[in-house]
Every structure is written in C-alpha cells, then in structure tokens.
Image 1 (spheres, one colour):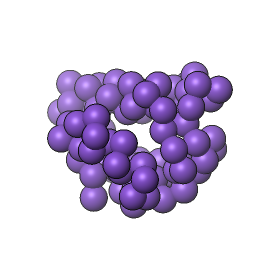
Image 2 (cartoon, helix red, strand yellow; image 1 turned 60 degrees about the horizontal axis):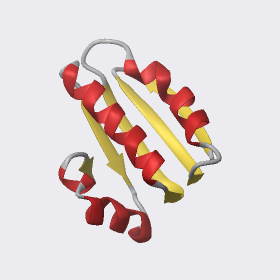
Image 3 (cartoon, one colour; image 1 turned 90 degrees about the horizontal axis):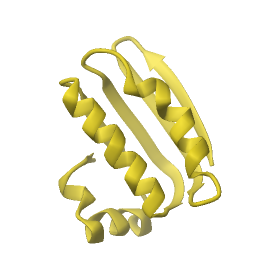
Image 4 (cartoon, one colour; image 1 turned 180 degrees about the vertical axis):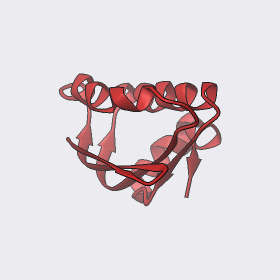
Length: 100
C-alpha cells in the first residue's frame, strides 16, 4: 500500500495505490493520522489505484469519516474500482461515506 498526501489550497488530496489488508492497515492508519487534525477538513481520496480493502481498511475509512464530520469537514472517495466499491456497497459504507 502506498499513500501520497498533497495539500492543494484548502483541500487535501490523498492518492491510494495497492491493497489495504491486515499486513499494512496499521501503516495506512499512521499515514493518514495527520488528516485527523485541523478545522473543517476537505479531503478527497483518489482510490483509482486501490485494488482491495479488508475490514480493517474499512474501519480506518470509518474512523476518518467520523473525525471529518466531527470537525464539520467533508470526505470524498473518488474513482473506486467496481470490485472495491462492491465491498463498500455490501457493508453499507456507501451510505456513510460520499463516493463519486
């Protein structure tokens, strides 16, 4: 799993590549830890390179969503591959996190 974070004006762009699973979920959580700070965060996550997410990855996305909402911000997942979006749909996360 590779995570790239870029600050663009008032928006944070995160690019994910690879798989989020039990072997790297902790690293993913550490990589996004800076996103859990600040007022009114505007975070877009480009998931076009994300091949898979386990339940641990889903838990981290949920934690990020809750943190962003508590700070009156917005989290958007973009360009999710169909097989990954299916996981979000089946688990109901598509109703919790904005996906475009």
